[in-house]
Length: 308
Image (cartoon, rainbow, N blue to C red; front, side):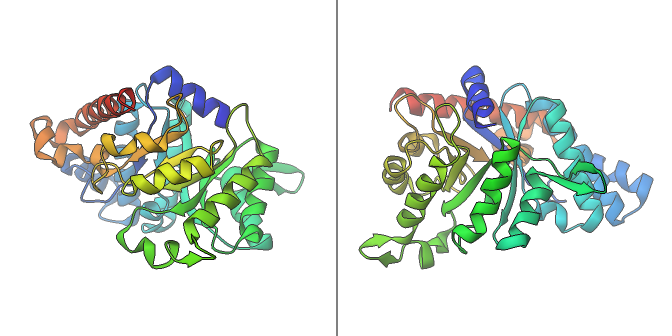
């Protein structure tokens, strides 16, 4: 799957993943009203509203970007109905040719870790039949429990030719409370990056590993250092746009060939119509606003990489 992701990035000239992280206050009123008219102001109504909102976004951007990244917590808050919306979103995005990065941030050990991996990127056996649960192409993984927590994901991904992105240096302000602590003279995030590089060697695609890393856009100087530690690992870069990251900060995350990283923007795209810059589109044309936000992000990244 990493080969497919890299190919799509090259074809579209867009190292962009759109985070499908819906909150109800992002969903335009006309979509909410239609869903509530059919199912009431219920969890099922909320799930329907989110699904229709996502569908409009996918229709508007699927020809511009290689991947989407649904954040599962935004769906879990609505219970089973939310998870059904998550599942429908993943299925529809796949039908549109998009790579799915499931932002699940799971981290456990043994059979529990294996079960998470099977549910999201593998196949579960029921009697004599095999079924796929959510069927993402990649998932995010928390490495706090070490190899015991990550290896089950790698094992399932090897069988399925799928991949993971391991949290290395996250974009949130308090990440340094743990991630920046020095151990034998090195920050913890660098030790995690070294481990990601090691894990990645066990599961290689053509040029890049199926094991990638998450490194926040808000720390470009660390991105440059980690790029050297993980030359063959794709870096998923959150924090663009709404969290302060901009194209000029991101060149260090990429290799000289312009590959090696994919940049995420979530509410900066999916709720673009709420920004002054895109207010002219209005709620009815929220998806058109999202499309324009993608085009603007693509131009910003192109300019940054040209000047790399």
